[in-house]
Image 1 (tube, protein in one colour):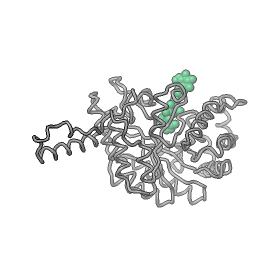
Image 2 (spheres, rainbow, N blue to C red):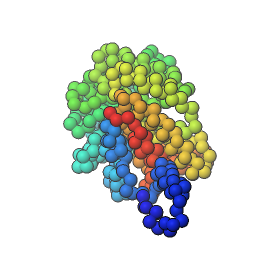
Image 3 (tube, rainbow, N blue to C red):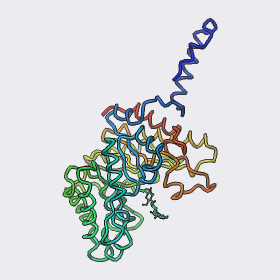
Image 4 (cartoon, helix red, strand yellow):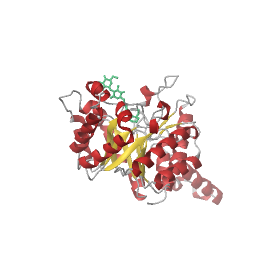
Length: 371
Ligand code: G3I
């Protein structure tokens, strides 16, 4: 921050003016100024508290757009591939594996001394088309386990943490144990999910193993909180080697967030002996008016409110955002605004300039209790 005091005619400054100036400087630092490259990075702020800041990356821009790569390297000490480790791209046909982009990301992590998260081995949404009939048959569980083993083993020693199973809970499907209506879960139940974790541990004994899921943040999502908690309890009681719960954190500005409910939920997860990581933070602004300043302010305020509660829980080990810049977000296509404006959902804008959301994350790290 530039020091303007030297430029002021000294005899006209009184104590009140100085105090006002100091207050304004403090406020501007807190609201955040986009043009302050010297400010400490998110990774440094997180590390200071024993936490980790990471971001999702996409191989396309990562290896073709220098400002994007720079933005990632400036702020993140952990990366997770958006799609490159999923089943469809890594095994496009029955006879062919393709780790090209996933390997490039792993090498990028290694070259730049970044931690690498793996996402994701078992997910109902991403099997390639050639697996459809097999997954529906009695051989489905075997195929899913083979895939998980192969994928995790391929990156053994390089990935520090895996989302082994992703989004397996869907109370609305009405299946036993609130499991999603997907053939391998229907046939094998929670024992099959435990087997996925055993397979993962065998494939890479050193990696931390996570279950990853969404929609547990808001008042109206109590049924999902209960279902996931019950599921994790059972998984633990079966002895499954699970180390953590990944809370995706796809937030919605203007949804009803109750700090006490969320605090309590986090503590219940922690009581199971699990680590917690927010794994996919972004904030949808679909419910907000078009005005950009207003959207940025509300998105930042919600981010701060959410992270303050999250970081208070000692079991929380860090935060990963689902992208660094508004330029690349699944939300633009996945959940478009009615007015077709682009969402302002991530820490940097389309031109990689820090938004109030960046400062909200910075501020939350600064105020987080040390681990
Ligand atoms: O690669 C094909 C391309 O060949 C084709 O031309 C194009 C046509 O639409 O599609 C491309 O695939 C897309 C893929 O992203 C790669 O860009 C898929 O259509 C698209 O559905 C896919 O979306 C991803 C989605 O997961 C499904 O895998 C998003 O980028 C990704 O951000 C999103 O991430 C998920 C997490 O994995 C799990 N939690 C929720 C989160 C958001 O949905």
